[in-house]
Picture (cartoon, rainbow, N blue to C red):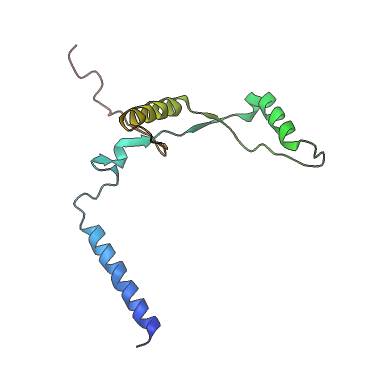
Length: 127
């Protein structure tokens, strides 16, 4: 038995152990965080797509600035996005709350999720 066959056997045993440990998890639903199933939440995108035809002046200005003094260059605007106001607002609130709790700290918001509305739960209460 050579070194490569030993290494191959060892890695196959390791992958079998990982597969067995993953199969033993009590909850088979994918989770975003502990106790938050992924099928009940949706990610809030940081940028929203916009039709470039609606923002033609912005595309022209961006093309002119990018081209600069290179007259033979070509710039193609493939997509135009604007910042999602909901994402910006939630990120600002979350970082402000975190900074208030921990002085001299910095935060990076990587993803924001919002809970999907449950169908059939609207207007069920008597008010």
